[in-house]
Length: 218
Ligand code: ADP
Ligand code: NI
Image (tube, rainbow, N blue to C red; front, side, top):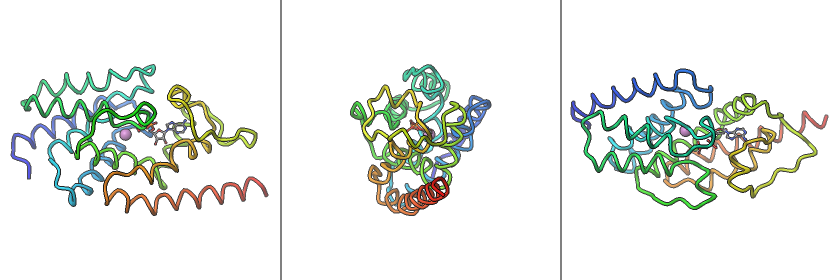
C-alpha cells in the first residue's frame, strides 16, 4: 500500500504523462501507459517488488520515445528525471526509475541491456505484453500506418537479425515486424506471470498470420 504522499505523487505523475502524451501516436498514447500500468500491477501481485517504483516507472516509461524524437535515446530519461525532481521523492528512487526508462526498450536487446532490477523486469514484461496479442497487432498497424509502411510485401523476406540501426529506422512492411520483434517477445518474458500471459497472445498472432496468408494467397 502506498502512503498518502506517494499516492499524491502518482496522481501528479498521471497528470504530467497524460498532458505530455496528448498528441502521441495512438500506439504510444496515454492509453498504452494505462494498460502497461495495470498489467505491471497485476504481475507484481506475485512478485513483491516495490509497488511505488513499479507504478512510477510504468507511468514514465514512454514519456519521450526515441523513435518520435529523431532517435534520441536521452530525452526520455532526462524528461523523467526533471519531472521527478519536482516531486518529493528519494534520490535513489529517482535514479532507479531513470535507469528503468533507459533500459526498458526492445532496442536494447541489440546492444545488451546494461541494468536490471525486479521492478524493471515487471514493467518490461507489461510493456512487451502490450506489443503482442490483439492489442499488439492493432498497435503494429497503427505504427506502420503512421510511417506509411506497407502492410505486407511478399517479395521482401523478413530479416530475423536486424542491426539496431535497421530496427530503429522501422521501414519494414508491418507483417515483417512480427518476425523482427513481436514473435520473439514470448521467449523474452522475465516473470512467471508474464510468460503465462504471453502464451495466449502469442498464439493469437500465429492464428492471425495464418489467416492473413490464407486470404493473401486465395
Ligand atoms: P519498445 O516499446 O520496447 O521500445 P518499440 O518502440 O520498438 O519497442 O515498439 C513499440 C511498439 O511500436 C510496438 O508495439 C510495435 O508494434 C510498434 N512498432 C515498432 N516498430 C515497428 C515497425 N517497424 N512496424 C510496426 N510496428 C512497429
Ligand atoms: Ni511502452
